[in-house]
Every structure is written in C-alpha cells, then in structure tokens.
Amino acid sequence: LDRPNVVVIVLDTLRGDFAAQLRQLEKKGFVRLDAVAPSSWTLPSHVSMFTGQLPSSHGVREYPDIAWRDLMHLSKQRLAQGSLLDWLGGRGYTTYGFTANMFVTPQFGFKFDHFYVFEGTAETREKAPGRPGARFLRPFVSALFREDRLGRIARWLAIGVGGTALRLLGVRDLEKGSKLILESVRGTEFKGPFFAFVNLMEAHQPYLGSGIDTLTVRLSLLGLSPPASWWREMYPEHAGLAMSRGMEVVSLFERYEPLIIVTSDHGQLLGKDGRYGHGFSLDESLLEVPLLVRYPGGGAGPDVKGRFTSLTDVRELVQKTVGGEECALGDDFAIAESWEEANYRLPSEAPDGDMHRTFSGRVRSGMVRVFGKGGSALFNRETGEVQSFSDGMSKEEVASLSERIPPVTSVGFQPPAEEPSTKDDEAVLKRLKDLGYE
Ligand SMILES: [Zn+2]
Image (cartoon, rainbow, N blue to C red; front, side):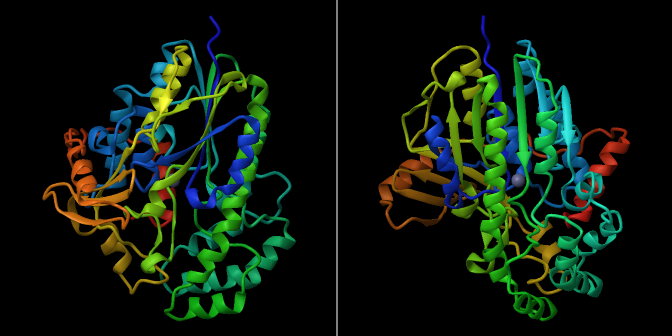
C-alpha cells in the first residue's frame, strides 16, 4: 500500500487579498480555494487544523486574564487527546515540524517526531552562519517592543541608523527564519511515509525594512500619530517574501510527490478603522486566507462543492487522502469565533496602558462571524443579536446562517493541575513576553 507523503505549509499572517503571487502554484496543478480561518490568531487556528474542530469545540482560545503558561498547558492537554499528528503516527507516518512561530511548538502540544524551531528576528540572526555582530542586536531588538522612551528611541534608531547598519552587516531586514527553515528542509532525509509541517513567519510583524520614507516614520514614532503608512507600505513586501519562500519550500518537497497544502492561519489589520495587527478581532481581512491544494503525484483535486473551506477541514483532507478516499471541499457556510474585545491597537498608537487593557480586558460572551453565499454576518452568540452583515445579504440568508451556528461544546478554561514547567517552556514564555504578549 502506497501511503502518500503530506506537506502542510502555513504562511503565517498572510491575508487572502495579498496572496495573488500564490496563483503561480495553479500552473503547477494546485487547486485554489477560498479559506476561512476559524480564529484571528495563531494558536486556536493551528489547533483547529490539527484537531478538525472549531475553537468553541477544542477550547484552546482567548480567555479573560488567562496566563500564557495556563494556555500552554491547556493546549498541550487538548492536543494530547488526539490530533492529526497522533492519527498519522498510528499509521506509520514520521512527522516533521519546521516552524518560526513559538505557538506551534511542542511546548504548546504540537509533538512532531522531528522538530526544528527558529525564533524569529534577533535569535535567528544570531544562529545564522556568517553574520557577525548579530549578538549585540538582541537587547536592542527586544527594546523595539517596549513602550517606554527607550523603546521609542530604539525604533527610531532601527529605522534610520539601524536599518543602514543592518544592511551593512549583511542582515536581511525581512528575514524571520524562513531561510534557515529552507536549509533545514534541504538537509533533512525524509523517511516515508512522512508528514511535514512548515510555518513561515515573514508576513507577521514587526515590519522593519528598506523602502520607506524614514523621515515620516521617525516623526510619527516620536509623536503620537500612528505609523499607519508604515504598516501598509511594508506589509506587501514582507508578504511577498513569505510567498516566494513558501514556493521554494513547495519545490523542495516536489520530488516526494506529496499531498501539498499551502495556506495561512489568519490575516492582518493594516489600519482599517485605526486597527493594526490581529488580536482577537473578527474583521474579514483577518479571516479570509489563501488555500491551495495539490493531490499526491500532482493529481487534480480536490473537488470544490461550495465557496468556503474552513481550516478545520485540513485534518479531514489529510486523513481522507492518506486513506485513499476522495475529498470534496467547500461549503456555502464557514465560521470564525472570538471571545474577547474585538479591537486592539498597536502600542505606538494607543495611549499609555491602553494596549494591555484591550488585550486582556472586556470579555464578550462570544462573537461569531458567519460566511455565506452573499457575504458574512457578525453575531453575538449568547444574545443571538446580529451586529452587522454585508450589503449583499438578505435578512433571510442572515437568519438561516444563524441557525447553523454550532453550540459551544468545550468545557471552557479551568486552571490545569500544576505541571512542572521545563526549561523549554520558560524559553517560549519569555519569547512571548519579549514580543509584547502580556
Ligand atoms: Zn499566526
């Protein structure tokens, strides 16, 4: 029995409407689908791909004032109850993880047989061969994320003097680990059948780099006005690099003739209504993500029977393909969920203290955005209230979509029994803190 190899590539934070470059994959026989991420941020979205469940079912999602350490344990417990990795392991697959995202690590329960992690900007540079001078940059880079005067000065320097210095040192500003991931994939002897998971972080913030009006940015960083143009200008370049690197990863795996899935876990807000980043908002730009699929051996498929494919279908697609079954994807219904304040702003834009408040603050009873043929609608799950819906939708469609919203079945957050933290756990938690996740 020939079991196909499987490769899943996540281009983290890549918006669907910025993913045109990926259409090149259609020439290689990929089928392109409209995908909906079940959540606006990395961890719930990935747990959904690996469990095939929505956050309301697997329960690994935002909670009021939850500590990252507790969420880490919860995610570990949930994935230990059965994930795609276990299912594949039970069928003789060897699993490989290559990731630059600290959420998709064994510390959060993603237990690959072979695991390669790259920790984003500063550390990545430090480990990269032939890049002198990178070590001293580490405290500087962490200062970039701080909200005090030092942080502002650091950002100011990073864009002006720092940007030039980095280029002179031969450090690529846009690099967030994908080069090292490519090297690792190239250097790995994959034993079949295998499952390889790759997460590339190039489209994720921070957006430091060349090609911007430094004077404008410096002025805006010193004052209170947001560097909105910076995000909008820089994002396409970063997303472009993520996509070209993603396509290089595709090429490296081609000789194994695998099932290949190329997607993203969520999008990015680039200043719409004064909002940036992803946080816990249910804006369409955070939920509409690219999805391209090619069957093993380059065969055509899968069949498309509806407009939207949820990332929760990734598990079924993999399992059916491994089992030699046909898989039809798409439905005229998809859902994304959130449990917290929808808007959050960047520290550089928000008044002092506001960032923390919006991050950990007001809890909603649970919001859902439901996608249907005519557009999408935002519901309050508990009250049933419709908050908004697309212009193209009829009241009847909104009502019929609301009837399809599944009940919340996860038990919710309960503090897990105290587990001894490992040194690796601490390292990941520190990394989260460095990146401003409080
Ligand atoms: Zn992500």
